[in-house]
Length: 90
Image 1 (cartoon, helix red, strand yellow):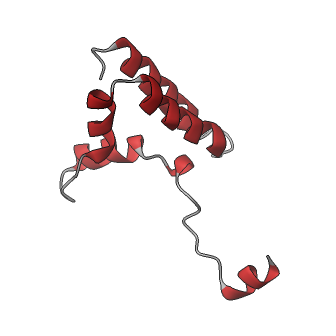
Image 2: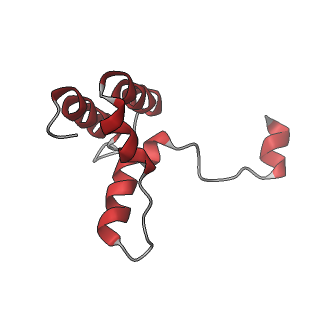
């Protein structure tokens, strides 16, 4: 991906957009998801698709680290499952 201009610039934008703020620890989830869409819109599919389809062994720390960077917490739905009272309030 780094050898291709479109892939490299889209990936860099994606990583920067999805990075949590150093002070608040928060991120702009809609912007992050938009940058993920842009990565697949502008980067050649044969370069961008393998980035998200890689599988990692639990013991392969480098692979796991890269995988977590490509699927940032900012882009994931809330990890906390609401309890029944919270659902009732909604």
